[in-house]
Image 1 (cartoon, rainbow, N blue to C red):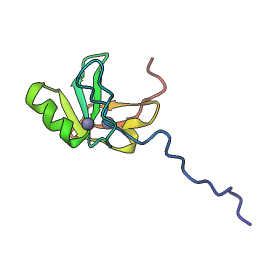
Image 2: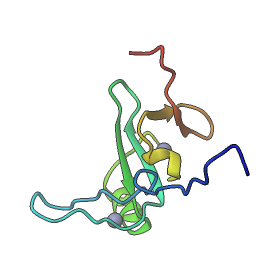
Image 3: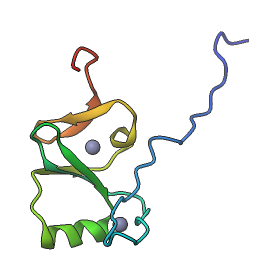
Image 4: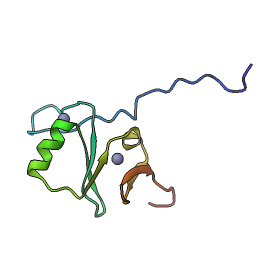
Length: 97
Ligand SMILES: [Zn+2]
Ligand SMILES: [Zn+2]
């Protein structure tokens, strides 16, 4: 008998999906995201999750401030962009706003 219940991770959050929406009426892409893009790192930042196809598309048209491979952490509630080399998403310190 173990002191811990057997928990199965639930992949509700932590499933980063491409949010590309090429026109105002098109459905979002929804493919598994490969890249996490920061368009600007000036507060408040603007971020996107993009699949490989839309990363190519965005690179041809837009300038972004930073990017890193999308991970489960990118889609977790409460995480924020850590400006570093390389950047990554971490749990935001609870002391900031
Ligand atoms: Zn996409
Ligand atoms: Zn991220």
